[in-house]
Image (tube, rainbow, N blue to C red):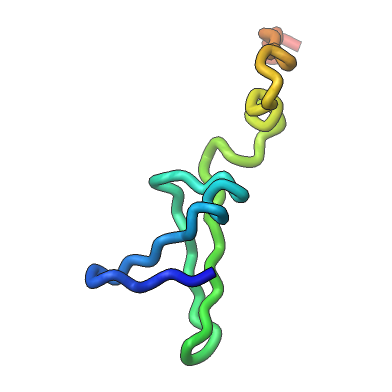
Length: 76
């Protein structure tokens, strides 16, 4: 897949990649220059990424996972 650099210096991820990797507007990426003409692009995990509860809540079968309120362990 290819993308063209805009006059503003922006690159667009092709739609199939955005869909496959669930890329969304506003996500942050890190760009590293490896050598002239070669770059490495990595998505920077957001605050809500990586948690088990968030991952379960994204299950395509709605209602499959229901979080329950937990009691505080502050008094133990």
